[in-house]
Length: 131
Image (cartoon, rainbow, N blue to C red):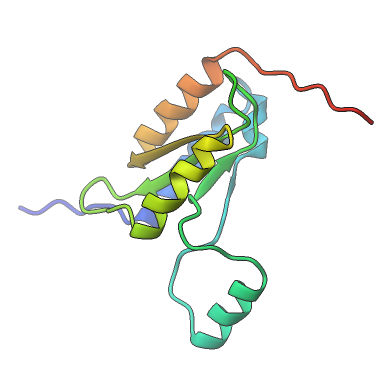
């Protein structure tokens, strides 16, 4: 008997459903969002997106909340089985880390939820902004 493995999209949808129900405990999850860089597109649409600034390698999910000395948390969602990090991601992730972001690759929504809980448990980082 073969088990049905959820797609990356289904895993990500489950993560956002979980986040919705966790907003009472972690109000900052209201800021969690998806960057639509992936997916299949026709040439014209892909060209327009590239002109608008879409970049290969950008992680799927971003939580713009400062914790533990990081400016925010990026999560690249993958299927529980079979998902692989692309060459563009291998190149892009260290650049984000160098700029002070935590970057994690998570296989399945439960792994991503666990990373978010660990991240949110870190001490908040306050940044002084001159106005």
